Length: 309
Image 1 (cartoon, rainbow, N blue to C red):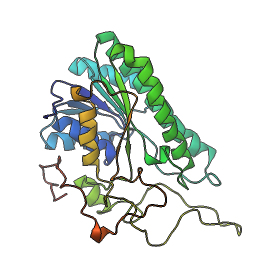
Image 2 (cartoon, helix red, strand yellow; image 1 turned 180 degrees about the vertical axis):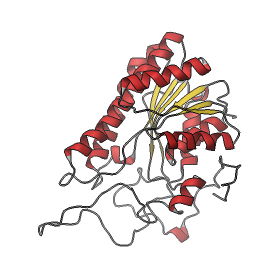
Image 3 (cartoon, helix red, strand yellow; image 1 turned 90 degrees about the vertical axis):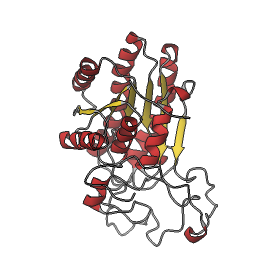
Image 4 (tube, rainbow, N blue to C red; image 1 turned 45 degrees about the vertical axis):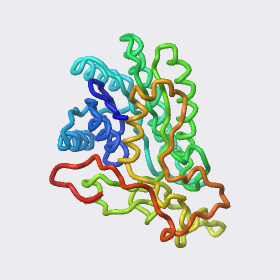
């Protein structure tokens, strides 16, 4: 089966250097033209450069996904430039935060707005374009394992990712008569494989060691405090030994946006090495006793930043 997104045009929100960039690169490598959105114009441009370095076509469409006027503006830009939009990936989200005892109203409000309005407004306006033009498009919202199970220290993130999951099911029902599919995709702490990000922050992921700007912030110092997370050595958590990378996510999202998935809507897809499937009492095999997955099929294969992924 050869996946082809040739002739399709995609918008990816939150196209920063990790998951968003990986998805944008994958869509481009499978043939789509990609419009890379991020609140930070430099991040959007960096995503474009990565796509172009690997032979794809992309443009930057920076903007705030909570601002309806900005969204209609960049959707209009994409349509005027390329004629249509066939794929939307709602990836923009505010990572980080604290637990319920410590989170601030301002951070909670902003995190929920980015996810709620970002998914709603982009889906609304891209969906209206698809419906009006008779495009049987694909819309994918990026969820998180934190939206399906409880995690200490990220109350705002858990709240809005849980909302994303049911937004997808409801939007899928709204758009089904138009042949527009809406699904979610759930990654779990992927290990970065963007060479630029690795050069900036070093190799490894949150399962190996805490990373700067990772989820879960500091707590207060009151004498009654109790730890909410185990801070010692991590036991093997993932049945297949790895939760994968943004490249793994990109391959799956590209397939989900292809015509091979033409009847899949209102569903959630997971790439996490079995992490979400395991029972709480299940202790996976030790890393040395785990065969691991098949070798990664790389997507970032050209340019000065190349390295073994």
